[in-house]
Length: 224
View 1 (cartoon, rainbow, N blue to C red):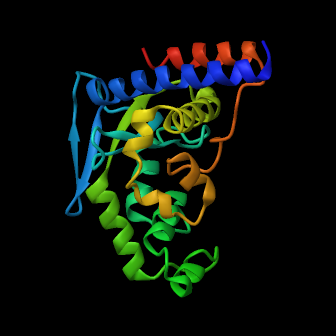
View 2 (cartoon, rainbow, N blue to C red; view 1 turned 120 degrees about the horizontal axis):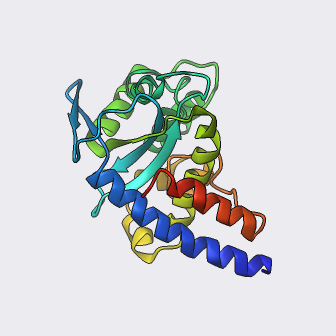
């Protein structure tokens, strides 16, 4: 299969997987909503809240809901899923790339504050950190996808991030949905280009059909 044909097939496959992933997130996965300093858990099915696995951030202000970030925890960190997710909500921009991206989007047009916000060793100002937390509470729900095999987490995360990013710039409906998305103003061009709050792995593509088939098999184990 030629490279061009492979990329077309991958785009089509990504849209199909994205739709299955979103359906699973909304109908089968435990979901946490943040608001007023509290976390509300809902269980669409009888599945228990997983301690290890992948999280999917959903933009609940989008109509319909859209996946805007995929993440996981360190493979060496047993039971690290929930702490990782809550770290994004209550920590700072220096401990959460999600918070850094959201903050840079909120500060678009304020070059002085943005320049300081982007400095790695500079502490984020309280007003912007609070604004980031408010945005997360108002716009983001998190669905939890259980994965008990910790060794597969890095590869599965890479595959899912790429799939969601490719689907977001391929599916006409998703392109329309992201038109008013805050991340379009993000200082990181990768976030703005691909429509997700991720910068790693969004440009990953299978090198051949065998690798594409491996991706499908791996994801199918967890997204039925």
